[in-house]
Length: 179
Image (cartoon, rainbow, N blue to C red; front, top):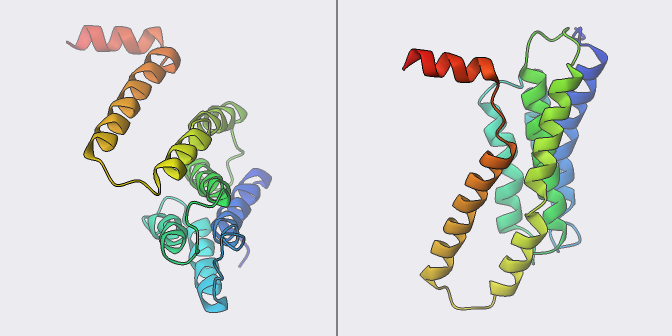
């Protein structure tokens, strides 16, 4: 039985299947060697996630490479970890887009652009975060670093909401009339 998906849905499902594997394979230069059985299990889980992108099983698919990166490579802070992060974000966005509407529904280009733009914005600070983590890797852990990181993340969230959080006039009016 072959699913009746639109061309865009087929592309999204391929991204869902391939990117978790890409995230793990990106760890090979970092000294990790994934086993064949592990890759086959991840492939099967990814295929199930591609068939049912709105399912909770996607959490397992996205967490499996993260746990593998934390345990298997000799250098979990290798620069290829940024490639793995981008691959997992691509998988998440593809599953999110695939879960909108019925399977035969063509992808809305406006919706695709919105989520791709959001993903790119989310990836912008990744090199900075990686650099900070790499610099602090050999240091003694200080609680102030966690507090500073949380404060920076909160400020970033507020600034991005103010800058990019455009709300429609209809939504504003509905909210004001309701309360």
